[in-house]
Image (cartoon, rainbow, N blue to C red; front, side, top):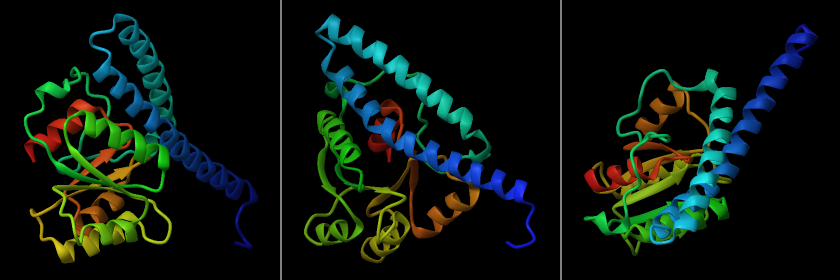
Length: 219
């Protein structure tokens, strides 16, 4: 803007850059958190692996704490129906305790997130298929009906909200659960938009798997 205070413009640019950096770093940390939780599943009988996993997990949590502090101004002041907390202190369930196997479609353009989350869900006993974008997801559900669709909020060409709206024309509310996945804390406007698009739940990509597994079992 021609009449804008140059100092204010610079500050706004810095804030925007900081938000984008926090978002990108959280997306980078999410697959690491999934891998740590997968190691925790498999390390019960190996004390050395369990010890190393605990150390890595503590480091990841510290990184997440710093990122959350940097992005705290953008965190929503109220919850979202069915939202899964991402730092719940409850212990991880073992795959043997999972009583209900779900059919889950994971949709994300981040290959590392897609691979790590799908591996973690399969380890927990679920049937999982993946799609790298919205068009692939919509094609897949024509022949395979999932119980849950986990949708990345930001994807090229067709974002998670657009995919959700199209899925809701195929599956009414309750027939298939739609879960919004985000690498940054959404604001109130985003959460309201998610509900209008037909989402049932929201999860932080850096989720606590115990809370997430409870959502999958109980929904």
